[in-house]
Structure formats: structure tokens, C-alpha cells
Length: 252
Length: 212
Image (tube, rainbow over all chains, first blue to last red; front, top):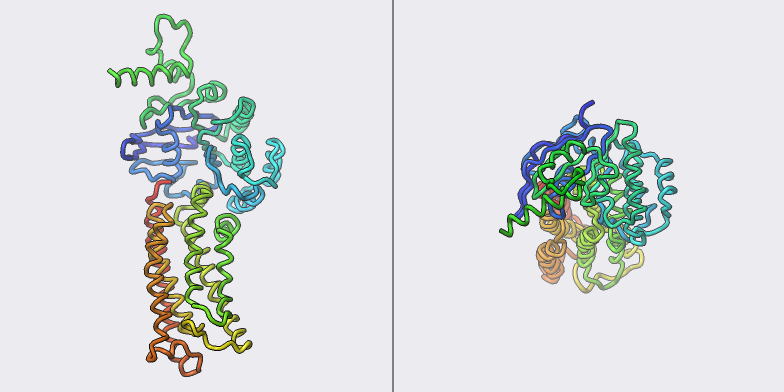
């Protein structure tokens, strides 16, 4: 089966930051973690994929369609969550849902109600009265209720307690279980990736340092191991050593 | 229609909806009636300011709509508010007649010319405001200040014109004078249609290059 998402040669320049030649792909039935430190370009990459940021060059193929040419159709088949963004804080959840569901051809009200129950969400509450974790859960409930094939999530677990994080990561594994759907999520919490990622894309200073399945990814950083390392490096160690060596070189 | 529903249910500032009904102010015996149009111009400012605070552009960008449609939704809302205001003014003018309210001593009366000038004021305001806002998608205040200048100048000109004896026919509801005012009304309709179309095209072009 073809890739659900193929990102090729995305470029975007800002004063002081650039996304350079970003390419990677997400296969069906896989969870891909997009990892990098703060400001590395994870969110800009996701926003460029979704045309919220207009890339200067590059292509995005989603479900075998050129995303920029078929944005509306492609968006019907994706679920998107951006953590940390408050929508309509004074509106009740029921009002936001009533609008959102009108835009999706495959909206599944039963499934949405199931998620409300599962996440203990009360639709009568205003968006602002939810905790950060509950806000993410509500946005996830919206994203999960229209039978999307691809889920794109920006920092969905940031600021959540361990129980909520575990719950959300468990949902990711359930989503991809049928082998047809995929999840692409950005995070700087390496333990999230240890827990559920099948593939990892590491972004550093706006460039893809490595994009591969987890095993290949971990082995490709063996050169960072020292004599004292008896076991393969963890994701956290890989990230720390990669970023540290870079800052040491800068300092020198 | 889903876009207009979304705008009304989530994005529109509640006060801007109230402004849509202020066409009824033409019943007030003595009032500068062009101020009614100012409310119709404040509505987009309030709505865009509110949209910024509620991350409305973000929410819309995540829905299965394009940036062009996002702009389209806002236009439908603002056009609805402005035209609703004028439509509500129509029965209010007849009610004023029924109540035998005397000619407005402050400035222009709610004549056909008043409706025509109102459409011109809206058209000019929208032509400046929308493209200025969609340059970056967040500077609603700056866009309003830029658009308010021609709006205020036109308001002053219209209110002042009827105090010039040669232009007193603009303020009259006598049948021959109403006939003379028809071209003003038609010019207003033409201006509004052309300016709003031009403003929409520029706004879409600008917003497609905005990074959220």
C-alpha cells in the first residue's frame, strides 16, 4: 500500500530560521514521532504540510493526492490537533462540536459520544474551563470522530499528566491497529516515542537529521556511543548527545 | 451556508450582531443617521478583533476548508450584517412616516439618497479594511483606523451636504426629489458590489500568503 503521507523537499525561510529540504513519509498502520528540541522546526513542518504556513517549495502527497491542489478533499480524511491552542474560550463544547460536525461528510456522532464518555468530557462546559489535558482530549475527540485515515498532532502530550499521556498514547496504538490508518505526532518527550512510535523523524535546526523505523533509527546513532555505554543509546541520550555536541562545537 | 453558520455560531462578536439591527435608529426624530453606517463598519472591526482573540483563523484552518473559503465566510458575515442593517431601516422609514415624525433637523433624512450613500460608505470602508486586515491576519485595529478615515470624511460630507440649499433635495422625501435620488441609490449599489468584489479578490490573494 502507498504511503499515507509523503513530504518531499519542503523549504521555508524566515529571518533567523529556515526549514531546509524536509522530506519523510508515513506508511499505513504506523505511528511516526516527529522529534526535535524546542524551535527545531517541528510545528513549522506540520503547519507547512497543512498549508497553514506556505512553503516556498516542496510537495506534500496525502492519500495519493497533491495536498496543495486538493486541500479540501484531503482535509476530510485527516484529523488534526494542535496542543496549546485555545479555540473560542467562551463557547460551550456543544457549540463548537455543532459547527465542526457540519464540515465533515463522515462525522460519526455515536463515536464522538463514546469519546466524550471515555474522556469524561461535559459538553455543557465552556472551553476555557477545561484543564490543558481535557482541552487536548476534547480536540482529540473531534479529530477522532470523522473516520480520518491520517492523524496529524502537534505536541498532543505536552503539559499532560502521566496518566493522560498514557491514555492518549494508547489511543494512538488503537488507531493504527487495523493497519490502514496512521499517526504523525510531534513531541519533545522522548519517552512518548519509546512507548508507541514505529518510525521516528528527527528534526534539527530545520533539517531532517534522520527518518527511519525505530530500530534503524537507534542504530544509526551508534557513533555517539562511548566505551562506557554497554547498551544501545536511548532516544533521550541520542537527542541529548546530538544537541550537546552541537552546542559544544558552537561554544568552541 | 456552513461557513456563515460557523461565523454566526462561533466567530461573530455578539455586539456586531446587535449592530445589524440598528437600522431601526432612523425612527429617532433627531439623529445623525450616517452614524448608523459607522456601526455597520464597527461590526467587522469587533468581529475580526474577537476572531483574533479566539484563534478563529486557526480553528478554520484545521477544518476541511481552504484559505479562500475562510475569507469567504468572513465576507458573508459582514455583508449580511451591513445589508441586514439597511433592510431593517426600510420598514423603520415607513414606521417613521406612519408616526408622522418630522424631518430630521440634525442632518440627512432616511431618503433613497441616504441608502445610496450608506452603500458607498460601506463599500469604501470594506475596500480598505479587508485587504489591510488580510495582509497579516491579525492587525484589525490598524485596518480599522485606515478604513475609518475615508468613512468619517464621507459621513461628514453627507451630513453637511444637506445643509447646502442647492443639495437640499437629497434630504427630501417628496416624490420628484425621490426620483432625483434614484441615481444616487443606484451608484451606491454599484459601488458596494464593485468594491466588495475587489476587496474580496485582494483579501484572498493576500491571505493565501499569510503564515498562521
